[in-house]
Image (cartoon, rainbow, N blue to C red; front, side, top):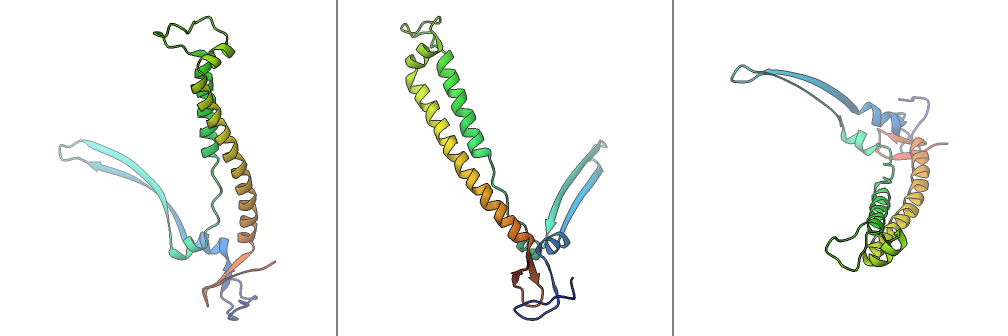
Amino acid sequence: MNMSMQCPRCGSPHIQRMAVAHTDGTQHFQAEHIAFTSNGQFAQGSSHGSQATLLAQHCAPPSPPSPMPFVVSLGLGCAVVYHASTSCDVFERSCRLDMSAVAMLAHNWKEALAGLGLIAVGWLLMKAWHIQAKDYSVAKDQWRKTWFCHGCGQSHQRG
């Protein structure tokens, strides 16, 4: 704790950065397990994880946005368009295996349209993720400047 500063709300000297309060209340663990089963067999395993106090959870940094929604949408859309440009139903008479990719797309236009729709949704999700990433950067910077008061339980920004 930093004793040279005080909480602007209650005057308590018991304040610390949110990052420190979060780190102090978070424990990471790893354990190795060895056991014998009832039939005398040897079993071994391991586990790992972390646990945090309520205060550490309260003082946790903001979570970054995940790019997975747009990555999955773009990937699926590209796969569907690729499939539409290269596949032909074996039992369909109007489809010929020697068609060009453009002709195949025209022939499988519903599937190609669905793939393009997924790509468009992925593009929109990517734009939203980009905005969220900027907001996250601002929120993370604010979190770094935020202090928690153990006296009144409130947080405030410095600097």
